[in-house]
Each structure stands twice: as structure tokens, then as C-alpha cells.
Length: 369
Image (cartoon, rainbow, N blue to C red; front, side, top):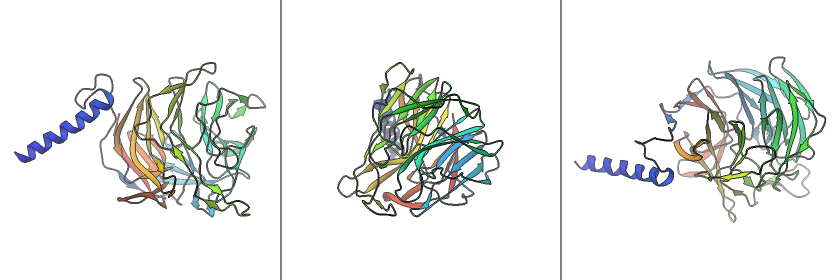
């Protein structure tokens, strides 16, 4: 009888919590059917190297993992390909000269062309660049594109209505928030114009945020202002983390190039370093983990393990599960009912949310949608 009472109290508490946040309980999904985890997280073959602040893009059953830090002094100049069907690392492709190895923006076209814009060229806290490239995944060839009007660190990018849209990030010092929004016409791996076009600025500058195109509308989620900076006059661009960073939960939508950005409900837990920790399934945007807070005096950073879902129909956020540990900049994908996460930087341990080791680990869980 005592066990039954405790179970009833636990169920009541969770249902009351959901009702207060979203207006529904687990037993009444009139408007919203949430994804659910149908299996525990399962460990898969680890990647060839640990990687932090890498780029990730899924094309069909392949996850392309681009660059990243192994350590502060060592960045990867390769693309590693993970076959989601075989659960195996199958290919390593070299990056072209002068392509940033971290903090870049990525998107794809026609399940074939991968576009890379901006980012950081070099290890430690080297400055941002505006270099742009396209990779043909069939021919395995790289081509240069027109550079951005200015360097950008950790921006976000989407292909929307035939144009690459690059938004936000930080300026060349990798810390000052940028709110500029530029676009460039493209078609089948080629540009249709020579210069980037100025678009409507985003409402809040900053980087390390994901974006999405859902139902032909452009979305922005979370992000941060500030970042690690290079030590002044250091010839090797060594980093200092004694900087103020503000992680925010803001969500925005743009319906057309001529309209204003619309503020939507905030994320349930603010997060940054999730630019490639996002998957889109129909109307649902699934964001995993990230960095949630940095103390303004001690500069201690806290990571998170939550899996958040934004339903673009009802414009509601939900917490649907947790990762195996707190982690930022994991590269995620969804394939054949499985949610995958690879790499990133995990917490020190279950009782310490601060950043710990950089990972090569790869995981998956069955997700019911």
C-alpha cells in the first residue's frame, strides 16, 4: 500500500508539472504527441578521434563529421563518415587548404552538396574567417565559394528558398556578438551570384546556436553572447576562459525575407553549443544537450543532458529525455527510428556538470515519433 501511494504521488507530480508547463498531461495528447525513448542508449563504435566544436551534417544514411578539436593544440583537417545503417566508420576525407576546422556553419543541398561557411582556421583561439566551400559528396571534390562580407565565428546557416542564409555568430575576435544576416543564391553546388546579399538582421546576435527550416519558415534556437578569447599579444593565440558568456533561451521565426522576426516561446532550458546537436522530423525540432550556464565571476561552465523538442505547429517546448551524460557539441542524426549522437565534450561526472574530456564515443537510442 505504501509503494502504491508513492507511485501515485510520483505520477501526480509529473502530470501536474506537464500540465502547468504545456497545458496537457501524459494521458491527454489532444494537440501534441511527444517523441518517447523506446530503448536505453546503446554504445556504438567510437570515432577515429575525439572531436569538439566540429561540424556535422547528415545526408541519407551517412553522418559527415567535419574537423573539430582533439585538444586545444590539435585540430582535425579531415571529414570522418559514419554509416548509420551499418553503425561503422567507413571513410576519411581530407579538408582543403584554408578551410576552417572548427566553429563553421554547414548546410546541404539535394542530398549531395555540403556547404561550409565561416569558422575558425587553426587551433586554440585563432581568429575567425569568412571562407566558404562546397563539397560534392558524389565526386568527392571541394570548390571555393565567395567569402562572407566579414569573418564569422560559430554562425548558423540554412538553405532556404534557393539561398544560403548565414546568421549571427561572433566577429573576428570570436567573442563580440554579430547579428548580421547574409544570403547567397546557389543551385546544384554552384553559386548563382557573385556576392552575398544583406538580409534582415537577427533580433539577438551571438553564436553556437542551431537553426532549422520547417514548413518553409526559418527558425533560430538559443545561443550565447561571448566566448573564450585569445590572450592579448600571444603569438600562438592561446585561450583565456576568464570571459563573461551569457547563454539565452530565445526562439525566433522568420516567415519571409520581407517580414520581421517573430519571438516565440523560450526554450525550457537555455542552451548553446548545439549548432549540430539538432535533428528535424516533420514539424518537430529535437535539440540535445549543450552548455547551459557560465558563472560571471568563477567562470565555471555547466553542461546539460536534456533532450528538448519544439513542436512548430503548437509552438510548445517539451523535455522528452536525457543523454547518457551532459555533453556539448555532440553531432546528431536520425535514421530508421534511431537518434544518434557522436563526439563532443562531456561533463566531469554525474555530480559535476563542468566540461571534462573530449569524446570519440558514439551512441544511439530508439525514438518513437
